[in-house]
Amino acid sequence: MGGPEVERLIALLAKLPGMGPRSARRAALRMLAEPETRMLPLAAALSEAARTVSACSTCGNLDTRNPCMVCADNARDRSLVCVVETVSDLWALERTHTHHGLYHVLGATLSALGGVTPADIDLSLLLRRLDGTVREIILALPATVDGAATTHWLTEKLAASGIAVTRLAHGVPIGGSLDILDDGTLATALKARRPVE
Amino acid sequence: MTALRLERLTLSRFRNYEALDWRPGARLVVIAGANGSGKTNLLEAVSLLGTGRGLRGAATATLARGGQGAWAVAARLAVDGERFEVATGTDPEPPHERRVFRLDGAAPRSQAEIAARVATAWITPQMDRLFGEAASGRRRFLDRLAAAVEPAHARALAAWETAAASRRRVLAEGGDAAWLAGFEEAMARHAVAVTAGRMALARELNAALAAGAAAPFPVVRLVLDCAIAAALGGEPALAVEEGLRAALVGARAADRASGSASVGAHRADLRIEDAASGLDAAMASTGEQKAMLVGIVLGHAAVVARSRGMAPLLLLDEPLVHLDAGRRAALFATLRGLDAQALMTGTEAGEFAPLADAAALFACAGGGLSPAPFPTVPRAW
Image 1 (cartoon, chains in turn brown, purple):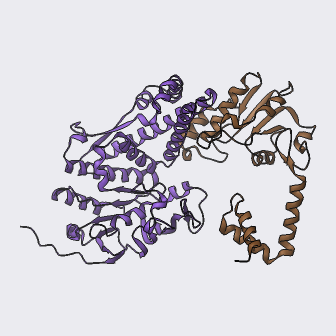
Image 2 (cartoon, one colour):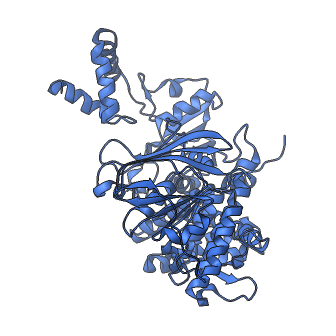
Image 3 (cartoon, helix red, strand yellow):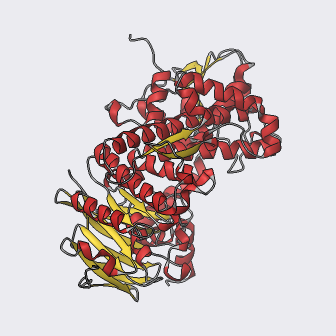
């Protein structure tokens, strides 16, 4: 329906995360109904982003500058490097305005069942950054089985550097009551307890 | 006590049902029909309104009519007169392998939202084999009971299985020691959480049964035969975790050779024994075993009702099989006294005639249900 151009558009949209054939069709039809106001500005934005945005050669963040705005910001604490799985995680942490150090985007977590092995994760870029200015590496990886295994693996790989390695705390969510938490989260929170300041 | 009520059920291309729109209309419901008429399919559809794979444990893609394509089950449920709609089925897009849920017409944020609203408990003829089958079947049974009381149990179990399968794969492929250590830490943590969940369920269920939750059915005791449970009885959980992790590290060579893990949540067995005599249920007669199972399901329903604040829907597939006249009468009397809604199946409607004044009967045939009067059964003198 609509000719090969429309079919191609739908097929390309359907490959995006969170989209399927049905939602891709809906999005395509919506754009085609208002090509001047929706489609052409989007096409221009896509083209511009594809031309100007690239991965930061230092940390892996996506930006129009290289090094990215975070890496180029001299006000940031260069002794702290936070390791995240994806750029999306980096942006999520930036939204909190609580991390004033730098980042490193790993690009993946190890997954024995998904076929991602230690050989698939390139640590050379991260290890090159440990030039004496870095005092702490914060591992901010997902709280999944694969995320936890990757955290453990990275901790051992970084042990020889002598740099302090920390990970995000797991436990009681802000605004959460203890009695609604599952046993695993509660036990983890208990293990990660800290002195009251 | 508040109870979950099924007010309306619609099926689309589910098992042998092309389309069904059914209103049970009563708290006690009997569905009678010949073998293969779709009685169990109906109970399975209701069991799928909650999370998990339902009372047959079937894969999503196999549930469609004809074994392929999309299917859907939707229900209007109510708790204390407050109605809500739950639907489940395949993703509308091919290949229809992923199961999705809707809560009041919208996608829930997570399956936990569904688990919090829908609770079911069931008994099927296949469960008669529980006492004689391999330990894995009893573990699945126990885990299902535990997850119905505490939905987080299912998450801990899934995390344990993922970590164990990942470690197996890495071991088989030669294994990076640092990577293996990550899985072993996760396995230890989740094995302790799973075992703690199983122990809590056994403790609560045993207490409910001892307090008469399933009277007059036999009072049984669930005993967890498990090294981790034994350790948790005498040591703090963190010490048990550390011991398990160390044991897994030490067993890498043996586990690589066996393709399994020498310690973990998968080594547990469930023993069910008569609370009074201590007799192992595996030694009891078929009829006694069935009576024990009915007792466990009724006791479990009481535990779910207390912990979740609402009595679950009871799905009793062929509950009368193997029960003698006295036990059947006891079951009917118990069901009359409960708050829970019960859907029961049987091949002979007449066997449920003692419930005629309290139950609705539906004849199941040709992929449909139709209201029917209870047959008059001549009194046996």
